[in-house]
Length: 229
Image (cartoon, rainbow, N blue to C red; front, side, top):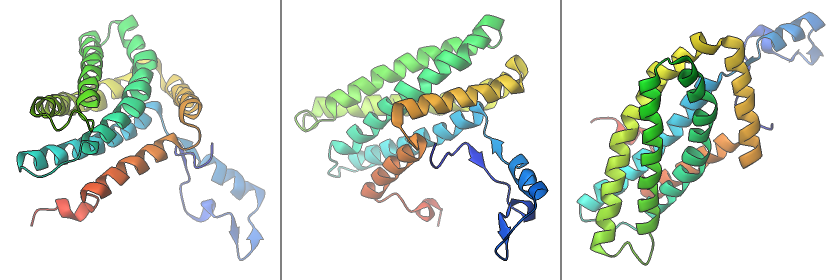
C-alpha cells in the first residue's frame, strides 16, 4: 500500500540505508527491518478519532458563525457530514462493530459499555441523516431546516466527545488483555485490507486532506490561531 501509514521507521544509524554512497552490511539492513513496526488496530482507530475530532471542529465553527448571525453556506455542514458518513460511519464504526465489539460481548467484558457504544453509533447515523437532509441549497435557507442542522450537530458533538474518550481510554486498552497482542496485530492487517478495498491507496491520508480543505475554507487551518492570547 503506497504511503502505508501503518509502518514507520525508527531513525538512527541503523535506519540509514547508505552512508557516503556505500550500502551498509547485511546485518545493518536486517536491524533496520527489525525496527520497522506495525501500528496496532487500536492505535489505528484512535488516529481515525483524530479525523473525527477535526470534523467536529468544522461543525463547531459553522455553529459559532450561525450564532453570530454570520452568513454560512450549507456546504459548511454538508461537506463534513458527508465525510462523517463515508469515513466514520460506513468504515471506522463498521470496523469496531465487526471486529472490536464482538470479543467483549462474547467474553461478557465491558458489555454495558459496548451496548451503549453500539446505541450511539445508531444515534449518530440518524443525526447525520438530518444534517445531510437539511444542509442543502434548497433547504438550508428555511429557518426550521437550519434549526434542525444546529440541533443535530450540537447533539452529535455532545455525544461523540465522551464516546471517543471512553473507547480510547477504556475499551481499546482492554483489547490487548482480552484477545492478545498477536490477535490485535492481525486485526490491524485486516483493517488495512478493508481500507484499501474501500478507498484505494492512502484512505486515511485522503480523509485528512479532505478535512484540512474544509478547515482552510473556514479559515481555521492555522493551529496557532487556537492558542489563547
